[in-house]
Figure 1: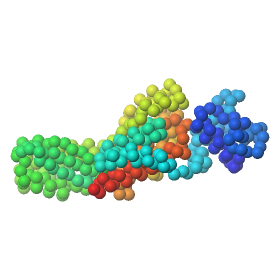
Figure 2 (figure 1 turned 60 degrees about the vertical axis):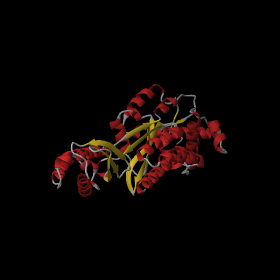
Figure 3 (figure 1 turned 90 degrees about the vertical axis):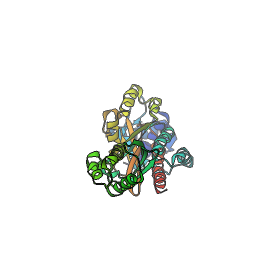
Figure 4 (figure 1 turned 135 degrees about the horizontal axis):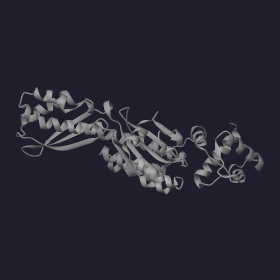
Length: 339
């Protein structure tokens, strides 16, 4: 593609993102400052249309970008900008208050990103072998009752009350921590189940039956963290984009279906991925762009946060915001775990 075609394509896309209106040759001359005739610009636009980068919604109208045009723009023409200071401050102020609670932090980060981008925001925590049990605490709250608190490697904190038939004494607590240290800490959450742990409980020196309620509670907590968790925020933003028209309701229904959204969020190559229109896995997203970035803890990918909005979105500003927010989330969760 010649430099002039690149300049025209970039100008059409950036203008269309701002106005939502087709862009004509005279307007392009003003935008680009090119010292050529309108006829020359029209010829270039016609060639870009033949190549599939532009579309002409009506015979007498100007041009609008195609999905192929957006793809070329994101990959080759868009300026690689850093996030601006205002958006950086909004992100930091919006989520720092939840820094000590990773689960609330991720939910709040989604709301902040949805407000910032005016798109729907989805976050997904990874599950399976990548999620391991990092810490378990037993807090006695009565003669027969204890609070169990479980912390995973991806920063999620789960707790529940457990009632025992036997009296909760020092010996039971000591035996419980022996089991935790030898058979649970450092293991994958998906491997902690009642069948495997019953054998471990049966081997304790004290009464195995007294230990079973505690072990069962730990297995239940581990099971809840082994499942990928999807959090949707800002879904009402879908209705603010006229590009969707009557398809907004169908898209909203799709966003509330956990299984396909989990697949969308986990189908990500590299630290940040942009899928435009029909590049997406599902028909319901064929008029949307999905921008997903990973956050990591200790060098390992732990989860993803992304936005879903119309293909006519401000990629140049949204992509740096998504990238900065996920990096910031990873840093805050890492600090919380270290503390």
